[in-house]
Length: 321
Image (cartoon, rainbow, N blue to C red):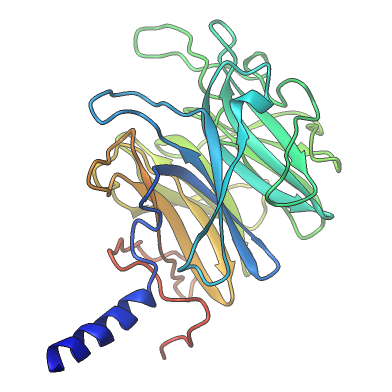
């Protein structure tokens, strides 16, 4: 009886934490979380590569929702490559944001040989859709940006990926994106057109996965650093820079070459959402989303991210003093 009582107590305690990875029945990658009211909506990529077949197999995006950061409700595959007839393959990293009651889902897709990757956008009146493509073509395409040159001296067309939107306190919206090159541009009020020129940001060892958020008086730009990827960050007093590099805050993802982060504040707690290859048959092409706490020092710097197996406690639980 004592053993059963102890087990029951352990089970209750364990259930109060999310556990990492947070989704175990499907492979999820490139998390982008959005707080809307009392709910967090988590948008992810969907890895479907077979265990013995290296390479990304990604045809749609998934959505999950939670009111406590522990229990996640699957909202299903609510956006796919089929919703972008001009896209040929690779439903890569994406980001959803709300403005004036409308939702904008920025995605990375492959347009085809010679055209490269592009950023598209889908819109909806609900965080779970239905979403549709208002442009019928890319928002950002490779003919708008200078494609990088690989070590063999060949032009590559993969720098227009990993979009991340941000709306500043004055209402101005921005889009950040890139691989090898880091770009940003203003968005018009309709959120589906660029407003003005495309700018570049130079940061040490920038690879991909930019994410911008603000805490207090500081803007934070986190990104994937090097390859295999770590996570680094820079800070600024303005969303348009200049950006001061502050260092690496997260090491290599377990059993996975890539790092891709999302940062939110929810119910007074700060969260760092990322992926790894932590499931039994996981890996670089079969990734899984995890969540751990994000902590700030008094000077605004970020503490190093500690990856855990237990994950985060319920957002509804009182914070430990």
